[in-house]
Image (spheres, rainbow, N blue to C red):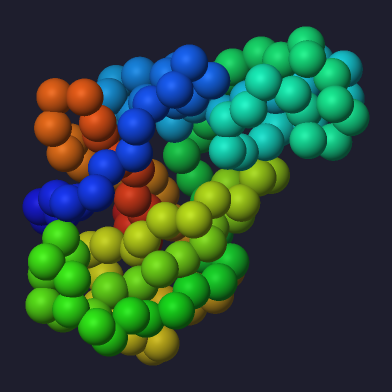
Length: 137
């Protein structure tokens, strides 16, 4: 599936590790060494305890569908068909906003708590975006 966004994120020094990971088909999260809390989105301070002792690690890429809406309005970068705007609960604990792809965009197919997995789609030389699809087994 080709999904090309017209508006792309701009990496910053605090998020560069995340975008580098996506380019290598690796979902990178941060974890606080003081309280062991994994979190997303990337930031230099732990949102739980405000510690700055942070490590970057490769997440499993597995998640469950936590919530979603089906957007019926056409978008040039998502095609003419409806598309989901979803929140997934990553296996490591954080929640992440995304789109669910490779699946009918209907309430019958988008079942809450269903297992999903990350898939990476290159947008240009600088940005590869993570999307999620129903888990393959």
